[in-house]
Amino acid sequence: MEAIIIILILLIVLFYYRRFGKFVYAFAIIDILLRILTFLKNNISASSFKTFISKYIPASYPALINKYTNGTINDILTWFYVGMFIIFEFYIIKAFIKNKKL
Image 1 (cartoon, one colour):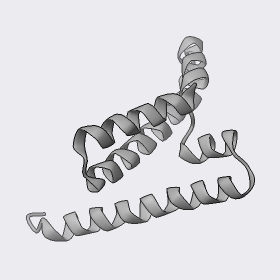
Image 2 (tube, rainbow, N blue to C red; image 1 turned 135 degrees about the vertical axis):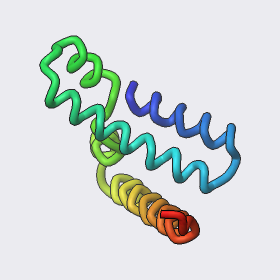
Image 3 (cartoon, one colour; image 1 turned 180 degrees about the vertical axis):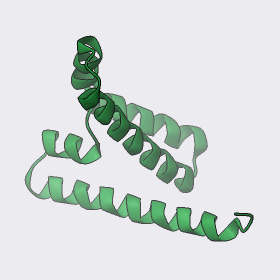
Image 4 (tube, helix red, strand yellow; image 1 turned 90 degrees about the horizontal axis):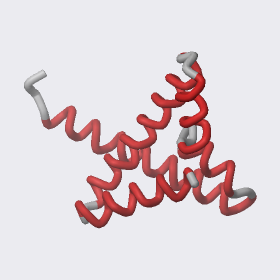
């Protein structure tokens, strides 16, 4: 279920924006959000919140990849994940250098 939710969100972003840069940003934003929700799940004692997060929200993309794949496909998807974050870092550094008002 959680894999379907993440894939649908990424497809909606891809079809809505139709630019690779926006897809990279959305990919990173979703992963950061998943990690924040996992942190909150581990540090908030509300059992209904923990149950909901555990059932429907994966901890991160690597956790999702490891849960549903293994072997060579797992390696390929993990390298895709790393590649997306390398591209994300490139975009962030480029934006940081371009914005000299800091």
